[in-house]
Image 1: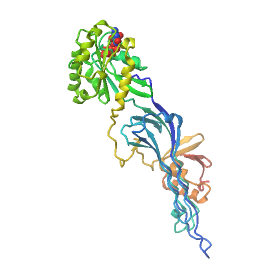
Image 2: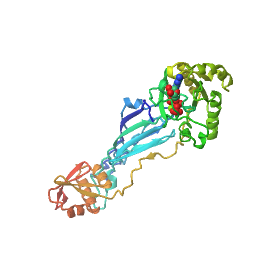
Image 3: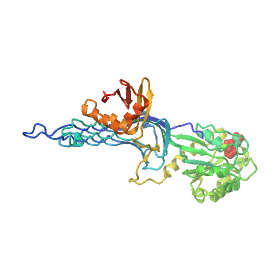
Image 4: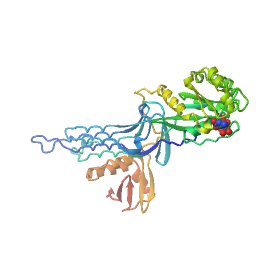
Length: 436
Ligand SMILES: Nc1nc2c(ncn2[C@@H]2O[C@H](COP(=O)(O)OP(=O)(O)OP(=O)(O)O)[C@@H](O)[C@H]2O)c(=O)[nH]1
Ligand SMILES: [Mg+2]
């Protein structure tokens, strides 16, 4: 497809960080140390892309390119939970294609139907407050989790061009010539039939209005049965709102222009009855040729359309083009865009089809002179650990032991004093306490 106007944008989205859990204690009269009463942090806001039928361009996203959902509120005393951060909805036009790279893989999602939502980045979890960390041996836990950090992702957005207008007609009628005159598209033009082998799209600006025109290969008798090239391409214009029916008014190829008109409509009807019912504007082309001038009165009389929808033009010499485009823009204003059916608001959002991984799995690799531990659960724990709290460090050590990670490090040959990196943190291995 060749379309000179590409509607695209690159944005960076960030989900909210979870709120921190609280490590507070009840204050009671006469009791020096009341029990733990620190509440949990709230979840960070998610970021969604939402296909919105009211939006028809990605242009605003070229000016505002960074988006962040709200962070979760921190937990506080009296077991008070932090507020969840508000989710952020970014409106995009239906027909937007979204691309992102996640863990080195590129994913592509299609937001085609109005109302469709894509969860692009999840908000971080809220940290647990100290009420969760009491054990029989530890009645006053001075430990609470940090909120999980939000995620950042770069999104490449591209709006699929959906043709508003389809060009139909016999081969050689001048469809591609017309497209090249009304848009910046540069389709191949030649004096033999079937010059156009692939659909071309062109964007047409008329005043403040803009529409997309699709040029398809010429149709011939029995195109609907797959004769010629028409069959494959009729589907490209199935969703257009208006057809521009281009007729060689001079009959250069020796056919009668009125018969051409009926023949093409017969092919459209046979392919899809609905396609023949689509509003049409007829373009009588090649009016620069004497034969076309001779045919003109008869054509105006015999074509079963109001005169206001028949336009004599000479595409090759750019004659008669302006009133034609004004009429097309005017007709389109009253023709609704054929969106896909909207999805109901309670439909769950789409998510990236990232393969599911057991969160307990971990892997150990060398990193410089030290080691790196990877794994969903252990990385999340580390991100949510407040290393200022000695009891949090104990907790990390217990998890490392219980999950088998410590043993795996030993088996791999970890030495006293080695750096062990997990997520953004670097710990120092100590044989005596596992971690120092
Ligand atoms: N004299 C004259 N020739 C024209 C005019 N418009 C197009 N042509 C010629 O008609 C021939 C076919 O033009 P195209 O635009 O390739 O026709 P098409 O309908 O796209 O043809 P296919 O792609 O084969 O279906 C070319 O030689 C053009 O130069 C016109 O207004 N006047
Ligand atoms: Mg062509």
